Length: 288
Image (spheres, one colour):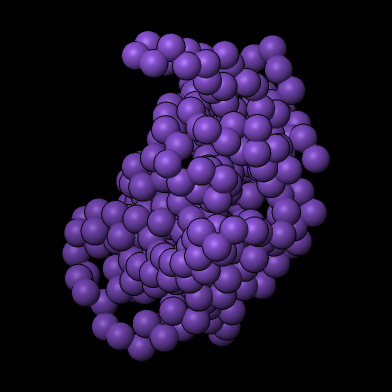
């Protein structure tokens, strides 16, 4: 490995961990200082954790870790070590941060303000962690795996699971008023997450023009697990022949794609576009 690659890795890993830490703490602020004290919940594992913490004497931070363990194990088996480590680290930070912030007073008891501000803060924190290749909620891991095997999107799967969680909250713990506010929270947070992660769709197409196309293509296949296509290109000014790399990935895999590109060729020209539909390929099944 060259000196430039070693330097990049030594700098990128601390930065990645710092941003995952920051994202988890920001998400905890949205939960403990705005949403939870006002009986407003988010969806997924966090939502279930809030419900159980209200039904039992145990804390929210404890349930966040316990309920995510099965999904972390599933993620390790299906999505690899790097994603698992990032997700586990983010969840642990979120758990400790919610436990620490629980002692502070709520910022506002106005349900509308708490819903809007809390949702934006929570969505930004979760989105930042996802942008770094991690996750704070195990249901998204499950949704991604389901979407690879069934003709249903990640967003649709998460929405179906959250509908049941919100109904459960209205029946067992909260009033229907706060349950409806919780639905608004989920909608706002999901939109903010999409904005932070760069794209409202689950898939992204990436085109890369690089002087090290062969090395980069091999790295993408080995580290991301996606098929890579080489397109023949020609510079209009120089008339030089160039290989253009084309690959389609899930949004959570984009962090690995960025890492691979920067390792192989930091000067590469990269184009990322949203993909609204994919058909006629084995995209659902990663190459391993």
